[in-house]
Image (cartoon, rainbow over all chains, first blue to last red; front, top):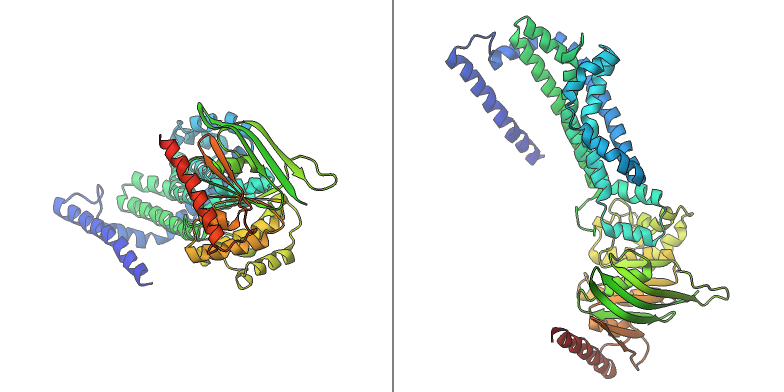
Length: 257
Length: 248
């Protein structure tokens, strides 16, 4: 516990320094608050608009969580499918890699056109943005099973599918966890892009709205709410990920070939 | 169910010939030891017999003979035990012992697994995970898993080499005891281990195999016996002679 509190303070120190620096820049430069509000003013806007921020933050949170669940499930299933079928791997992998050269941002207007202004276009954005990191990290993990485990399974005449689910998948869970950690950071980006392009709810929408009314302090407050959502999600996934890693590999490398 | 194996052929890795016209006879219900310096291809032979990928090309034949009335020459099921215990870290001791039947989709014989865990002296540890056990205990679990497979042919790839001297000595006796009815092929670089356990020994060197059948009591041999020590020095000499001829 002691090291944990220490880590927490250690973690908060640079954040505090940034906030102090930010406030100093605002005071010393005398920049007007509609250009750059200081952190104190942003905190004030956060508190006085807490209802508004919570309402829009809730929408974004739902989009992000649903996006994570759907994108994660889709990524896991795709990686498994590519692992099972050599043909799918040959045919699909180039398409998947190619699809990553298309900036997801460019797809946002089309997704809004096709799926409308509601939640689904934002969820789709989040899914699109996290799908590839989840697929590729999990696939890497599935392919890097210690060869000794596989030789043992082969000598036991394991069926390929059982070998996949009893050996490869458990051994690949730490890789999946790191993919999901990335996804926790990317998914909110996807959702907010979707909200910028066209929405009537959500933190991205609130930021645009505040920007248009020159309420820059509210815009920053919405941004901070977004950061809080992302950090919390990443923290939760990190805890789950550590549990999975400990389960799959209690002393990493000690008994693996 | 006793199985003997006969291997004949050559192994190449690309242009490099690992063995040319190698011939090995592995008699049923005996311990056959393969000795040799690292990189000479001991594990490759073991993998060939086990039907595992070696990364090289093999030209030749491997024949198995089953001592059953209807015994064919098809490859029998083999069990494989390596230097690293290869226990799945996310499974308990019992689940690791049962992994073979789960991987094949057979019914798991849990009471047999518990018996075998007791046989290797781990009855109090069936629910523990591998990382909670010492290296010697983990190798015992691997031995129980090998026994659980109940195969006529057992391939051991330096299974005791990572253990400390005393644990190794105990594990050799335990393995010899519990694998008494099996045909065993043991790859090792430990001369005294081969002398202690082997009904017959093959000393491998590039392009050459020396067969040494000790004219001694059958294993498990006492290493302080004068004849055994004499044989051990003969094996050492054979190994060294080959090393010299390799360098020349």
